[in-house]
Length: 113
Ligand SMILES: C[C@H](O)[C@H](O)[C@H]1CNC2=NC(N)=NC(=O)C2=N1
Image (spheres, rainbow, N blue to C red):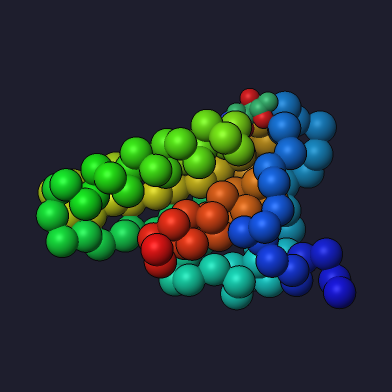
């Protein structure tokens, strides 16, 4: 199995303090196919999750924060009454790394619970 085509959500983020190149546009396209409705710029991936109310939105944000802490990889989040926008980029390389896609897959899984 090609390394970019396997279960992203079961992987763990690797510490990144630079020293690796950002993912290529081809790899980004391949990895995006494994996510549910995420969109990409050349340096980030983002998605807005809908919720019924503020309580459910904040419960999601709390679980997201817990996963971010566990993975030591942190998204930018924008919270509204019934929606949450999640944006991942890898600051250390000013672009996208596999960590962004691993976390996005884990957040998709969280949302589907
Ligand atoms: C060592 C550890 O991987 C780094 O400090 C992490 C922490 N969380 C991070 N989160 C994000 N989004 N980008 C980073 O480059 C980053 N670096």
